[in-house]
Image (tube, rainbow, N blue to C red):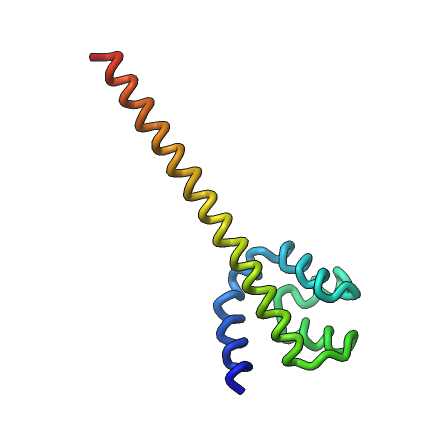
Length: 111
């Protein structure tokens, strides 16, 4: 029962990321379960209860097995989001440093 609660907690935390990154989520789901169609995934559109049911029907997997795979997928997607945020932050830092340097150069030339 604790695993089920952990999955639900992880799902709730990741739900906004997944819905915001639906294209990547669909791709990850299709890599895990290749027979899921775009139509089935679009119909579910982020409703993982519906996706779980579809996977159970098509593959005969247990809920626990599906949830384990989804949890791993969530972690991978979350890691990608964190990496993208870090990369964006580094870019902003570089731009701010360049602007500061350019500002100093202009001040030096005007003095």
